Length: 295
Image (cartoon, rainbow, N blue to C red; front, top):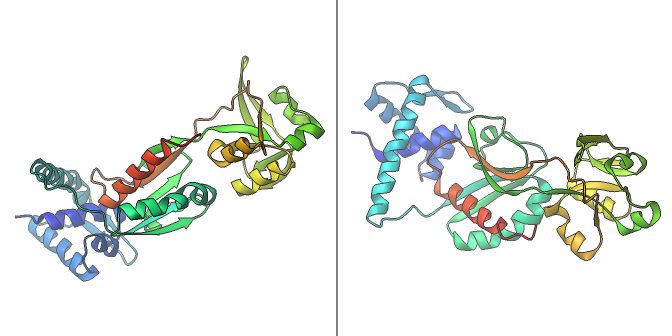
């Protein structure tokens, strides 16, 4: 008969591609975790995993077996819930990667509340504006503001990433405000690298404007601060500039021409119907928190 703990380990392995990491989540040493998988394979009479020195991947048989293993575990969870056994308390280390500006402004201030709620959890947080390979880096969750390109990952929307065009009162006083997107060609702009063409919705359809960048940078906070200092006009996310708007350090312009953008903040995690309790706890906590944000 198959051992439920062996199935749990196999499902987490399918998500992490790392025996040590999957074992650690379940309180197992790498040697014991490897032995459990071997026993599961012996019981089934097939190889479920390709093992290399760096990571493991599922064989064809493993891929075919995965949905059935998830089904069994889902049934066990439902059975436990039906008698009030509840869910496993999140524990261990949760490895998260997030964009630098967003992480500093909106993740770090919420971590104390999150960790107070889940005292058996630790966080390993990496802040970088570079898109990191989740599986290769061993991350449980990635916070991203771009669409998914990897079909082995799942994304849950945490909040809209509403973007506006803004500048400082000092810049407006010196240069005036553009009355239409086309007039941006006569203005100084501050841009993120690779984002110097701005597309607007107008009564005549979408209009793309190639801006003249006085400053290009790879950091959203640097762009925002330069814009607030009077260096030019910029596109910024509301989550980045809402306090500057409230204080009057920045002013939204071109209200009648919204940017063509469907960006959002996503929590991305490896594909599996059965989320590790720590991953589910993190996503639920921050989705609730962000639903109450003033932007």
